[in-house]
Length: 142
Image (cartoon, rainbow, N blue to C red; front, side, top):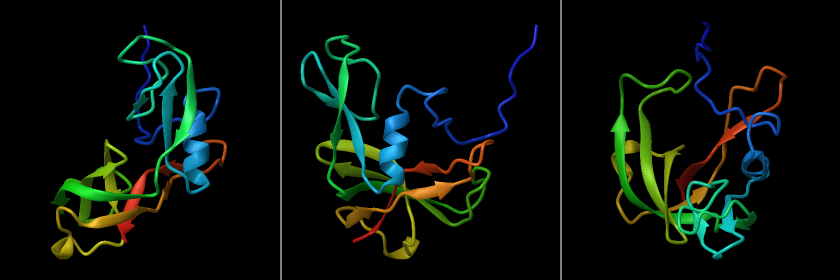
C-alpha cells in the first residue's frame, strides 16, 4: 500500500485535478466568483460542485463584488504556513452575504479594523508543476 505525501500546500487548480478550476481561472483574471445552484438558485461560499441545500450537482458561475468588509481578523507572526512571510493578516471578509476566509495583503496589521472596507487583490502563489500560475483569494485595504 502506498500513499501520497502532500508537500504542496496550495490547491491543484487545473481542470484535470479540480472541477472548480474555473474559480481559479476567474481569480487569476481578477474576479471573485462562486457557484450558483442550478436547482434552487442559491450561491455558496466556498464554491461547490453540489448544493448543500438541495443536493443538486448542476451549477453555473456567479461573479461576486470585488469589495467587502472585514468581519474578523487575526495577525499571525510565527508558525506561518510554508510560502507565507510574516506577519500575516488572516481575515474573514463579508462579500455579498458570504464570509470569505482570506489573507489581507499590503495591510499594516496595526491598522486593520473590523468594518474596514477591502478590495480583491488575488495573490499569486507558487506555480504548479507544469509552470501554470496559481492563485488564492486575497484582499487589500480599499
